[in-house]
Structure formats: C-alpha cells, structure tokens
Length: 366
Image 1: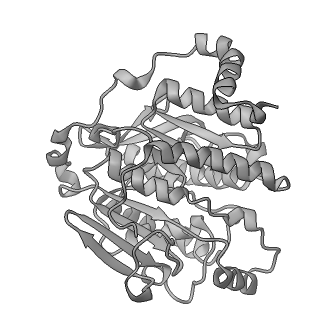
Image 2: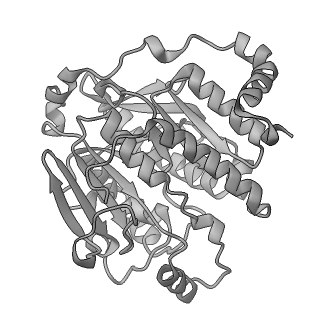
C-alpha cells in the first residue's frame, strides 16, 4: 500500500509513523563543523601532506569473473552475494564533492573496470591524471603473489592493502556502499594528529562467534589484540562502525610483520572462512593502542541504512538521514531477491535519492 502512495502522501504517512520516534531524536549534527577551505592546506604532516582514498570492488555479474569463481570454488555461486548496485559510482562522487582535500583515488579490482570509468586501450591496471586528481586502478596481481590468486574474499584482499605501491601513508578505506553525505571536514578523519576511529558496541558473544562468520572473525581478532597488548584473555573491545576506515600504511606493514603466521594462513583462503583476521578491526585497535588514533562514538555522525524490501522502513531511514544530516552513511544490501520486483524498486528508490544530490561528476567518469 505505502509504495502506491504519491511522494507527498508517503512523507505524510511516514511522518505520522515516526511522530513518537522523532520527538526523542537528539539535536541534528547540522550545527557541527563543515568543510573549511583551510583543510586543503592543513593535511597532517604525519601523512606527508596527503590523505588518499581506496576502494575494493567486484562486478559479480561479469561472466568471465563468474566462470573463474565456479572453476576454483566448489560450492554453489550465489549471484546476490556479489551483486553490483552501482553504489561505487556515488561513493566516488561523494568523496570528490564533500572531501576535496582527498586528491588520490585507488580502486583495487580483479581486472574489472566499472563501465562508467574512463579506460585507456582496454587496460585493467592504469593511472589517470586530471589536474590535481589521480585515479589508479590496481589489479590483484599487483598486490598479491600469483600462487595465491585468484581470491574472492575481502578478508584476504584486506591483508594486502599496504602493498598498493603508490598509496600514501594515510588513507581512508571505503566499501563501495559507503557514501559521504555532506561537506566533510578534515577532522572527521584526522584530529590532533590522530586517526578518528568510529565505534559502536563491544565485541559480542561467544555464541554469535560460533555461528556468524563476521562475528567469528572479529572475536578471533579480539583474542589476538588481547595477546599482543597484554590484556586479559576475555577482554572485549569496541566494534568499528560500518563506515569509512582511516588507516596508516606503516601500521598495516607492522601488523603483517607481527602476525606473519596468521597472514600466511589467511592468504590461502580464497573465500571467507571462520577464524579469519578482521583487518579493519585489528588496524583500528593498533592505532588506538599505539596512540595514533582515538575512539569516536558513532552517534549521528554516520548512519547505517540496511536496505530491505520494506519500502516504509527504507523511507523511515531516509527521513532519519534528512533529520540528522550525518557526514556519512552506509547503504547496506539486506534485500530479499526472491521478490525481484520489490528488491529492484527499493534499489531504484535509494539510487534515485543519491542521484538527486550527488550531481558533481567524478573527474574520471566517461
């Protein structure tokens, strides 16, 4: 019913549904800092005067890639696990629009190029320059030993981020569904010479770690953190929020050297498995414990939007985002593709909204 209402009727209906909820909402972040032109010249000296951005990306609908996957992996291919919704397009645009102090973009792929990007002579790894901006498309072969390839797990790929040759010391690691939502000040990522580390709750239960792979990798990594920094064995640490991860290349190299045995085990895992390292989580707690980062509660600075088939629920999330105006959001796929019509409609709803305000072209769009 809700989907059949006009946009104005939908907003009225949703506002009635949200009335009690909105009365309890905190003050919006609108009054917090926004981008300042001085940020362009105040990049941290610890970062050698630059902050880069990096994405991993896969096109799971590419027949060549699917054939490679089926040849190597002995269980059924799930197209929904790797489905591409074109959120990378808006993620790149959002960084260009709202964090203009980031000039260097790195895209790591398995010899795949998004169809909206410029591509010289059908190359699958290349560097493009446009004024102050640089895009480097990096193939897996450039950062991972060939005997390990191919890999289909972000857990594995994240082991090798520091092997991206031209990547700067300080960088922001984006998933392709991470979107900057408004002008973002430099101190959203770095403040007082420290990386901002956005956190939510604590590590979680042993029960979840036995059944859910992401919880398992975090729980496993938590035990390594306790051993490394001499905490009690059972001590729980903060989860990282599901938003952009601020990282330092030198720290990732240090982590590899100190957990070399774990690295060598994990890089043989072509798909995600239990007892894997969670590199963003490990990196975050290294930065904190070495006093190179500081925790920041997620609050309403960034919002996680689980996109489902329920249009009213998605509309509510959009209303909350409009109220808080967070710096960033994660548009995470929780769609049920058994009803393809509904799922497609909700993807279009979300992408139409992103397209309504992310209008400035990325320098390397076709």
